[in-house]
Image (cartoon, rainbow, N blue to C red; front, side):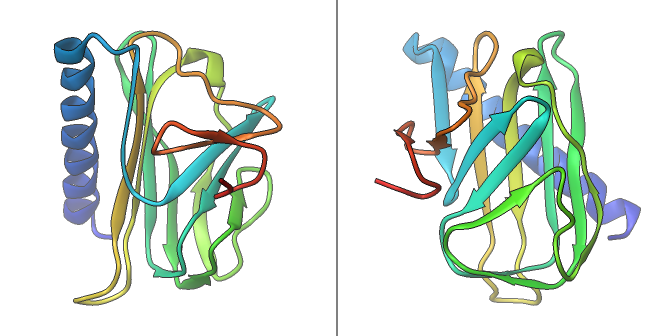
Length: 158
């Protein structure tokens, strides 16, 4: 991804996360979630993202906001992959067909996660998922946090 497009994605993700954070302040809620069909889980430093709809992807980009308010990218994958509903991407396992980084995160220092999944070409399915909290975001282990705030035992489960 050219630097300019990467910069646009970062600014887009930050804008989405700012809107979510503003909702926290306006509604008084402790946590907000939004948009895309994903679920997240964390086991130690390993971070997992479940894709909850069939999608062709190129690229996947995401950032986390730390307790000190700084944003940093944790996933920046390029290439092409056809992901089925329930596919789990894990920071400790390479994603077939994609190259780049997917770094583990220390979930206890994270207050927001924003993930952008882009489809290849015009008209392709694309989405952004956001998870945000006033304090440390509660990312479950051994279960999954969805963007509708539900925690389920299985990725994309009900």
